Length: 266
Image: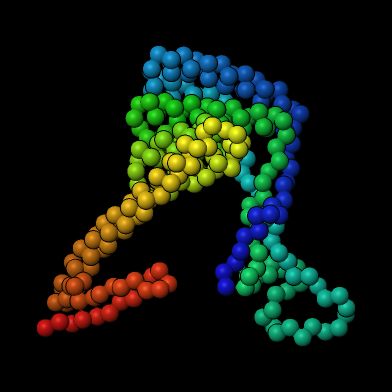
């Protein structure tokens, strides 16, 4: 059986606090980033998307990089409670060593970092700047880069509703299996974040219903295209042996995978 993920017990680890000696430098960097953001906003107002993006990125360059999530601590084998010789086989894990995966073992996801106020301020600034970059790419018609910038913003602020909506717009325009699946996830996230009284919920639920058949259609289309490409590669190889992919028949089975049969033909 496959391992499961325990999302109900994700521990929070306090990130390494900002050293006092660095606080003044970071606050100075935040001030400069805010100044550049205002300059970028002016370029955005003038519809100079390229210059606005460059200025927002300059502002990002003044901010500390995002701290990575801490990995979960390894599960260790506890030593015996008594002093009797162990009956474990020679290859069993040694005392204190990481235990091998077991069936139905609970997998702990990455540990969320709890940021101090200054680190939170930096994270918020990065999220806003990346969100602004996404807006510029969206206005200029580069939906792929806009979606990437949205994803960067959401790494710092996963509950940034405006950016979630912006990423949905980008991925809807890209209209691929991957992008539409991401949009579907973002619609569900919005429903979790918005209060029950929000007037936006009705339109989101309607959009969520409408996007489901589009995801399925894109999946079928891209799967067919992939199989056609693989068929072309297979024919180029099998042709050397007087065979082709027509000699092989693939049929879906109850598990969702495919079974193959060979027909040599005449």
